[in-house]
Length: 98
Image (cartoon, rainbow, N blue to C red; front, side, top):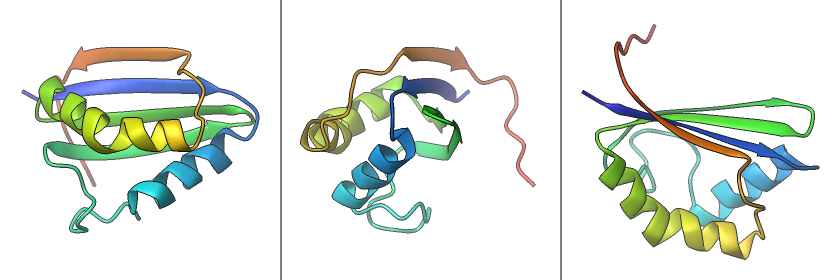
């Protein structure tokens, strides 16, 4: 079963930072794109003012960790992304998309 991670940031300009990171990694959110990480099943980002939450489903935590080490971590560093206020993993119970 898939693993789901919830990552939350609370910082001014959170959405701007999110968009900058996506630009750095060359990701436009299209699942068939070259930048779509291996093992990623789904990705949703949402905002409320200076708060950004990202919810992702992965085939495994190891797949997300590999992406973090190879692409996302260096992009976070380049964009000077503050540490998330929350990172929490869950085991998926159901995966339904419309």
